Image (cartoon, rainbow, N blue to C red):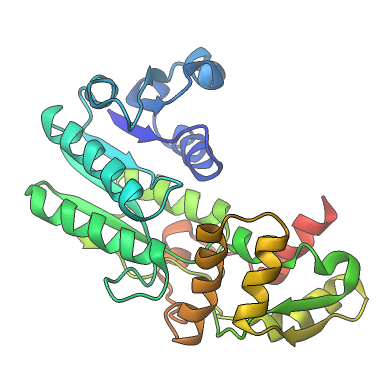
Length: 286
């Protein structure tokens, strides 16, 4: 039995779909906050149980009989994130899960400039301390984040962001394929994986060139001072912690935390991962 948390989310749902292409549905279970949103999975034979990171008993029930548990990282930051992950790990121990896999991130480190990477590092420490077999999937930085930063430029042609550095932007679909392959035991890793990334790390100057090629329109990269970027984010309604979180991505990129590229993702999925240019074209075509 393979249990996946967050199975109605952007990454979790994709992983479940890819997993169902590899293993019978009766070997797959999901832990979700709202089982109604996973009704179609239940109709296909997937075990659907309610599991809330704020309700430890529900997680123990959702994780029952799991040979492997995929813990999809929470969309939270700081102590709230780590506390939720600790609740899930404790529930996994109570449920006697065989192996825990966790969606970590490239650059996970206690001294990262990016809060999420510090949260991932603390969660990896937690997994290491369980004594259970575990795997941390060091996912490349999600390309969806870059696309979100680019959204205002679709109209203006100006990519006005803080100074950055090269980032190995990586697509959700490729990461979902790789995770399903690992869960289906087509590949196995003990502890952190190598960085699961595309073949290139790009800064937003290179991204501007790709946007120009994709659209036939000129895109210009301009650098916005950190303080000005933060003020603009606040003026657009972003809470201060979110503005600081966004800004920390650029600080970490300048430090070179997301530059690593590796062939492991391509080996797992049996093809070259989608380039950022391809992901940009797909997103903007929609």
